[in-house]
Image 1 (cartoon, one colour):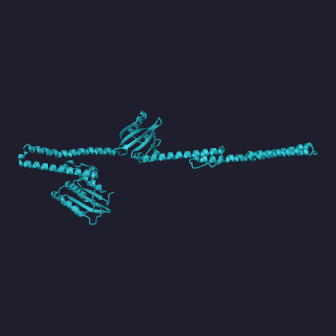
Image 2 (cartoon, helix red, strand yellow):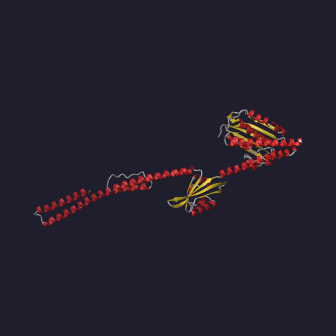
Length: 461
């Protein structure tokens, strides 16, 4: 561009010089005419210089503005998030350096964003896979982040929760007081508290300070549901208490009657025989209790796995009914047995199924008044095998139905102990059914009988 400008100036100067030399050489012309011609030459020269200058400026502006336009367009796209763009300018002047700097900045920015996105995805994956509820709050108690567990527990989405105060999302006075205390004292907090949501639950709540350098920026609240743990602890405590009570009762009877015999009752054969019969019955009760406890323990710990085989249900049901025939005859009960001919091929453990049938049928016999009726039926329902034991007994109160499969639970405690029940029979039945991947249902009406129905699938679910 500088070369073109110098050339134009030289051309104009040369033309002016030629005109002046021509004027001196044309002596016949008058001076005034020469001056007029010189003026015209000067005007033409100025016009040519302006024209050439405009052309040069146009070229210069075009060569400068076009790269700037491209830089501006690409910069706008980068600002909109499209960091894949690149400014293609090969010149080595200031504009080329600017374009290279912008390209380098875009690459580094994209690398940083990709790294941040990857870290965010890792954090989201970790939070999503956690069993605990996690939410982050700032110093004002406003929610910054929650994970899917909190969304599910409190039935709120992240979009609805973020930015709101934690008490607006989790309405719990104890939690609000704990968060306020943590924000004031800036210390780690860990307590257990109950929530109504809508079912009562117990959570282990931990508040850990969230720091940004040396400054405390808020807290991370971790909610761990320990409801099941506390329920199991309560069940274990009740189990120990029930076992102790169940063992103490027959042992107390055995000890009392033994002491009575040692104190002289042995001298009276009639009294001695009566007391010995009671001791024998209590020892039998202890044996049944211990056997049931061992069976239940083996089932619960999965030490006893089903040995699955196709069973002859006609034979199995017949053997169980024959085994309990003396009890049936003693109460003058009617037992009806119906086993379908074409049963679905459902493999099951013969010993477990026999124990299940004995417990269900024994339960029906105990709680059916004299002259009542018991029905045992086996049939197919699709691919499932269905077994049902129904009676016309005293029935079960509605409030007791949800708990009858619990260990040592008795709807009628006094009557159950009088009949020699351990309170473990139905718990064993339930574990046997679950070990086979099936389910058990119960229908009952007070003084209207009870029906237990077992559904066994072809394979364990």
